[in-house]
Each structure stands twice: as C-alpha cells, then as structure tokens.
Length: 194
Image (cartoon, one colour):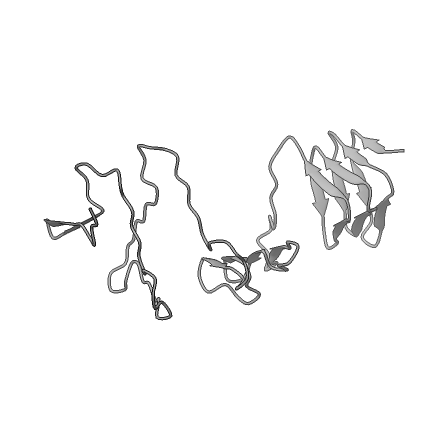
C-alpha cells in the first residue's frame, strides 16, 4: 500500500527510512537525518518540504516534485552536483568550490564559468542556437574586457574548411559583417559569389 501523509514524518539521526511502495507527501514535511531509499519500481512524490540532514536520498525509480521549485545545496556547502547520461558520467557537473559548470564529455575541473565539451565521436555540433524571435538579437555579448580579447578563436587544425562561415542570402540593405569602432563604420561583404 502507498504511504500517504498530510503531516510531518521524521526519522532519527541513525535511521534509514525505506519504502517499498509509492510515497505521497502532500502537505506535511519529511525530515530525516539518516538515509531515504526507495525500491526500483516505486516513486516518491513530494508536495512540500523535504529536509535531509547528513544522509542520502536514494531512489531507483522516479522522483517528482510538484507545487514548487527545487533548491539544491541551500546551505551553500562545498558539495558538487552531477547528472549522468547513458554514456557520460559527468554530462552535467557543478563544481561547488569553483562556482563553475561543465556540460558534456569532461571529467576534470571546469576551465570556465561554463565549459562545454563534446566527445570525439559525438556526431553532432558542439553548440547549436536556434533563435525564432525575428526582432530580437540572437546572441548578445556585453563584455567589460579592457586588455584581453572578447572573442578568441584558435583553429590551427583547420586545413580545407572555413574558420568562420557566414551565409546571409536574404540581405537587402544590411551587411554580412558590420564593424564600428571609434565612430567609424565599415561594412564588409566577404567572398561574395553572385
């Protein structure tokens, strides 16, 4: 039978709370200082606060949080957060001590605030951005840099492809590349083939 609670459920510091059926906590709080574990075929549903101090939440089934948001590491501890995919153990990794995030095929410390790395056999682009709002900028970079490059591309391995490839077949009065510096503007049409 499922466990349904509208009041608080608590466990002592050394206890482990185990469920073999669905758990539905609709209005109460679940406070456990030990561990919580669920079986492989069951789910745990939380509609209110869950407080786990010094223990683990281990569920082989699914976890569903409804009626509110989810906050991880509320205390601001040096505790990393990791999501695995089928082939990547660090598909999403948040390094708490460095305040950095890595996505993809990377198992070391992230080298930037956000680092994205794909596998050599990924078979898809590293990053794809699709902007469908026709009157808004697709990518907006606001840089406070003073003495370092804002955009730095190193492509020393490229031999027969283009480092930057711009296609803008629908242009009428605009430009494929527009550069403005020190109140002087330059419109560039690069390698135009009519």
